[in-house]
Length: 279
Image (tube, rainbow, N blue to C red; front, side, top):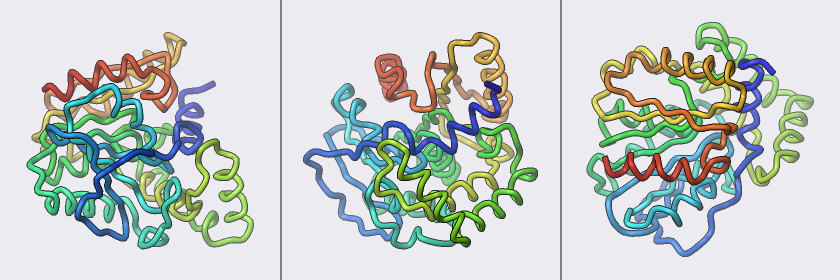
């Protein structure tokens, strides 16, 4: 399978893996939002955990168990994994989400917390850091340009993404297709097809690469590679080139793994995250 096709499947199929809803006792943060819900677990240094496309906080379950001693703030995007879409049901999505997470950081009195984001959550983590709201950032299997995950560019795929989003959300056939895709994806029950389509559209139009030189927070990028050496080398080259503008960025591959690194290689991921949080 080609790298482009592999990454396309990973991006569009992120809803298909590891989307179990997070459960357990949690202290609700004193914060109300029509775009996100945040729960807080544990005590210690503050860490924001942001899941990816169609995912809920359940993707971090093993992290919570493996890394005690931190106060984890688990972000749940409305419209994903069982939450009603509310304000995320239409219009721009990614930038408003980044703004809302930044508002949460301020509301909760967090002082430049560590931020960890997977896939789409990695984009949001970078945007938060560019706002000066993160003390350090870990991006898990996401490139600065969402379109690059499928081998394209924001300028090249942005228009196509706009048209595709219109088809998926504005036509009977498109809505039926997207609803079927979500329904068939294991663990994606309760995710709103409209919110997923809006997220894909926005991600295809976002390229944070030119802004990376002004990133002041330490950055670590963990990315998935498969068992094929040639493909792994090509993915490594792509990630290194994409993050070249981020001075001092640390890139680490994890494999063999698919897009859900934390589920495919939990021991390795936990070790990397533990070192990252120790800083």
